[in-house]
Image (cartoon, rainbow, N blue to C red; front, top):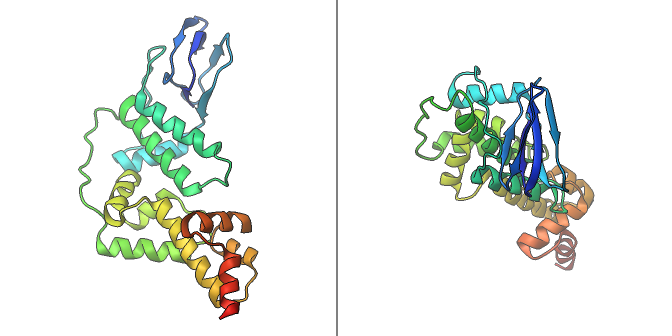
Length: 247
């Protein structure tokens, strides 16, 4: 597990695999990494806000293999109150996605967790001293075509960074950078635009119920599709269909 403090915690008490407890001030941005199967005791004296990520060991091992060509690693212990500003930034982005009041953008959340997990492996594990492969350049023309084809063929499904990266024959973190360099936007924004475009086509070319179109194009609901189209296209599916009838 990974814990990032979003508010300060004075007088925080922690012990890990020991009866000896440390009491300290945990500032905003303090990070704690708790290995799997570790025995943790924690106590705090004031109300707090933090982000707790439970990262499955098998997923971390697989990511390590894709990013560092080895699944063998251990996390290194951190000093109490260790602050990491980048971890805080990523934690706030994850928190904001969960508290945004809209259906979760699964590919965006997966992208954040991929970046976060890779960052932790690169900075706080025994992989820290491992050379980082150079990852310059965008997607090759073939990789871009293959990724586009896969997205369109699976537009109604939850897509993952790992799967898209595999299609492009890249590590997940390299894929995210290469995709942005090639397309000019992140994968989750491209996916949303593609879903809206296909939904518009189905609204105008078929008599399919709008709720069915939303499901086929990967939106969480009819209202989610409507809100997305209004925000990005300044119209709604119902308004589009009425223009077709008028014609």
